[in-house]
Amino acid sequence: MNISNNIKYIGVDDLDIDLFESQYHVPEGMSYNSYVILDEKVAVMDTADQRKSQEWMQNLTDALQGRQVDYIVVHHMEPDHAANIAALAAAYPQAKIVLSAAATKMLPNFFPETDLTSRCQVVKEGDTLALGQHTLQFIAAPMVHWPEVLMSYEQTEKVLFAADGFGKFGAIQNEARNADGTPADWACEARRYYFNIVGKYGMQVQNVLKKAAGLDIQTIAPLHGPVLRGNALAEAVRLYDTWSKYDPETEGVFVAYASIHGGTRAAAEKMVEILKAKGCPKVAVSDLTRDDLAEAIEDAFRYPTLVLLAASYDAGVFPPMHDFLYHLQIKGFQRRRFALVENGSWAPSAGKVMTEMIGQLKNCEIVGPLVTIRSRMKAADLPQLEALADAVLAQ
Image (cartoon, rainbow, N blue to C red; front, side, top):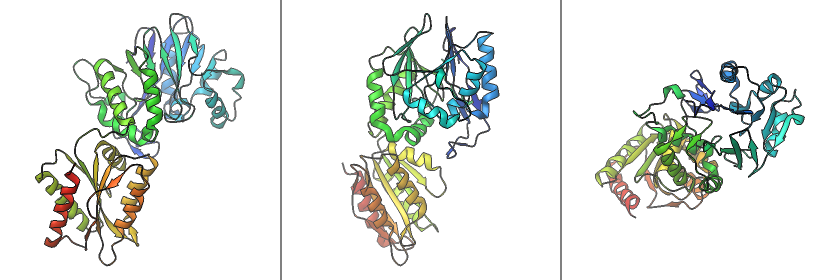
């Protein structure tokens, strides 16, 4: 996955990891991308996770072919990219560590045994670093998705080193590709990655996209996932614009349910059936008790309307639904429509809690009446579900 003769890929795949950031399922593994620019001066662009330190260092050594490192460029201090800074600095004592002012404050937090202060070369928005024929132009990208983040634009080969921007779940070697070598289905795992990791920071992503619009970018080199070029690059930028504006991406409805003994699940299945019969173009479904929560968050952001069905529990709402709504809150979820169905055998309470939690979301509304089911769906409940479906599909 080399970018050119002078910009080499030295990243590594992790096929043994089960949970990325100890919470996101990654059945196709994860890549920790790193690059080295070979010019009059040599710049290493980020490192890798400590899980793959030895393999990453070997990749760098092979690419260097005996050359020394002049600059260690740190776009992001998160440990999956920065775990080897101290080791790399020790191996190449003449190398300067190029990073943002905010990142310098984080260095001693991660490397308390090593004083790297004298090695730091602080850069900010608009600063450049000349390597010879290649020049890096730095772009401040705070809160995409940490405060210290930088991106850099290599002016000669027109490469954007995008930090965690435009990343995705999955190992490079497991990436499905088209005949021309472009990613075959970049959006699927890139979407799940974006909304769960970067999604809260839409305004900050928009700021970076505006800066990038003024650059002639031919290649995007992210810290996770494939290098993007051509049509794949253009599509990724289009989707990032949509996602970071909190605009729905796909016309349709997302039905998410949390059922204890199957009664709420049956109501959800009936609601899906009704919506499809009424011509809903797409109905996505998630069982919040069993399905991947990160995928549910992804679908919540993808569609304009959500139908939530939940059992009552301990005078509140069944915890899987509470967890889902809590995650929407912390991810900055906004500008969507909700419809609600609660289930309760003696004192239904799920609807109240769901309503309160949705009320804490920005620019979200609840459409139609709250439908209450008592233990099991009955024939008398069907007209209410039909009416709720009509409210959901009304524009």
